[in-house]
Image (cartoon, one colour):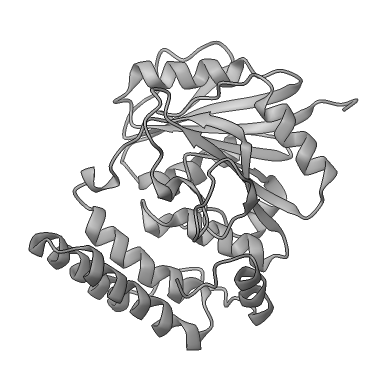
Amino acid sequence: MTDAARFGVVVLTMGKRPEELQRGLASVLAQRDVTMDVVVVGNSWEPTGLPDGVRGVYLPENVGATAGRNAGVPYVSGEYLFFLDDDASLPDPHFLAEVAARFAADPRLGVMQPRVVDPEGKAPPRRWVPRLRVGDPGASSPATALWEGAIAIRRDLFEAVGGWPDEFFIFHEGVDLAWRVWDEGFTPWYAADLVVNHPVMDPARHAVFYRYNARNRVWLARRNLPVLLEPVYVGTWVGMTLLRVHDKEALTAWFGGLREGMAHKPAGRRRMKWSTVWAMTKAGRPPII
């Protein structure tokens, strides 16, 4: 590329993992053949001790991963956006340059998620591979969901889809983003040959996991799906949860979240086109699973 691609990089943190944050920032600043505008968004933490060239955005309250990422976007410039969580890092200094080259080569490529690798070699959970049939994690494919810890997207597309869903706080926002990218006529892509490092963690460590998991499933449907598919999608996940989860306390929290999702209408509804439903079905995962 004659002109270096420009990335607006938003790193999200609560300030509780200082070593990991510094590692992630160092891996961003080591990127070659691109220009970057980097901010660290402190969710209820005022960013301090940042490397030269990195600015902080202070949010007095923890607004969640979704609104936190969105809050950083107005502070960065660039035709592409890259979102990185504070416990993730890029092992390859050519990562962003390769991402930019792929965006330039394919105008319908909208958003990319790299393959997630635990730096200690632990087996990756299936949720890190954004397709129904995981198969070989090393095989690239279209994506009908996204792991949110390291995401590259065209800035104009990000703005067109309305960004991350603020109300979700955490969990399933990558599904919402992927669905809307599909509906704009672009392809979300799982780039298995591009790698980001991130430790294996159990999402159920969050106290609100089961509640938000269920609530956001309902909001996914209510924000995006044709009315006919809303009960099908929610009903499918009710059945899958009953099959998978047997802890009484967890089920109580999950069904509490389900009721919350039904009681409150989320903002930003955009009904998915039936042509998008078909495109996602051909990609391997109809939006009812």
